[in-house]
Image 1: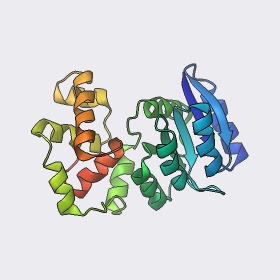
Image 2 (image 1 turned 180 degrees about the horizontal axis):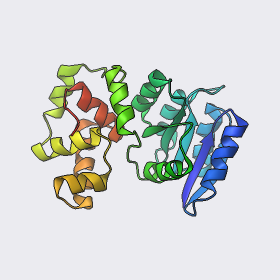
Image 3 (image 1 turned 135 degrees about the vertical axis):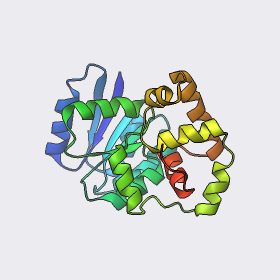
Image 4 (image 1 turned 45 degrees about the vertical axis):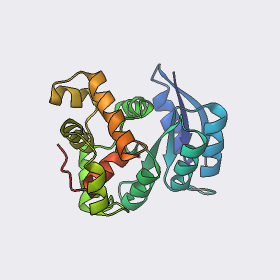
Length: 217
């Protein structure tokens, strides 16, 4: 069962998400909160697997909460909930360790799928959204292009190919199919990539790849 937290200061939004997730037999909403500080506490107290956080909330916004959750509840994967135009805040959240983000008008089927994907730690950035963020230069790395390239240089050719596909938003199964390898092998490559690049998740690795000029596959 995927233990899920909903954090949004809009009561109707929380209720709507809860109703949608109630249709998934493998998802359980274990807590609902209205601000960032409460989200951090709830993740710790309820052993949350997936936390869905609104970007803008009172008493500790979603971006601040991401970093706090990563530190205090490392088992929890965070997906941000955002309005379409809030790209800068989303980019900050990704850097803080979120596994991706969902738009608030995401359909029921996609919302449930996103929770399942987030539970595995995989990125839930839609490829077209990733491209839009990159085009606006919101994923520009703090270390600079040269430093990013030096980190990418640690990877083998196969790992580079895998990273390109991760940057394109592909799942483990899709990467495995594209590169003619088993899903377990793809997952192992991604684990090694994250370790070598010192990245917390796939999204941070994709950001670093962009900084280094590594084109998505």
